Image 1 (cartoon, rainbow over the protein chains, first blue to last red):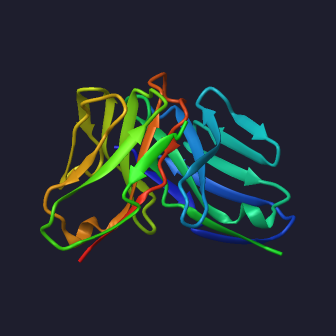
Image 2 (image 1 turned 45 degrees about the vertical axis):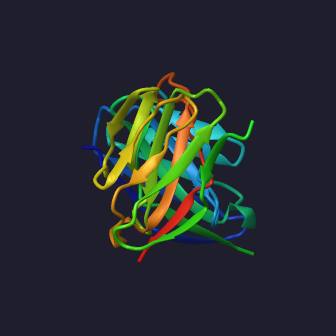
Length: 112
Length: 114
């Protein structure tokens, strides 16, 4: 079955710097890759996603890149702000429709 | 729209007790699912449903039962609670369009089994 690895597990950056989180997946049939942000005690919320026929997608300070050949995708956050501090999860679609395997998460801390 | 509503928010059980975690959505979503979240392990799929009367197992189904009698509700039953089921449980729903339909999560249920 699908396996999703995520690195690093924790990441600390200075406010204004960039942050990069990387994920790899094992099943070449996966074709949709969402990223979720989870603040402490809250529910996961979708922040950006990418389909397998697209190499890069950007939404303001957030971008995601996908390398299908290498089976890895990355989240890039530029000009980080304290409110970006949270746990970020990558995920890969499996089987039918809306089922996913999630990575273990990255705890991002943005230091003022 | 309330979105996805989960109850209770917190629950403490003793080993061997049974209980039902409730999940309801008011967005007329066909797809609903249950995930559990454990530290350092992300979210793992327990059971899912693609419509009323249809359920299937996910990655970690043992010890849990589900049913889907209506489009709106998707309860998760713990038959005989075990300490290994201590976790945060999230219900989620989406339209049954394709793999890139947005998944909406409930606010979670924190369950402790003593």
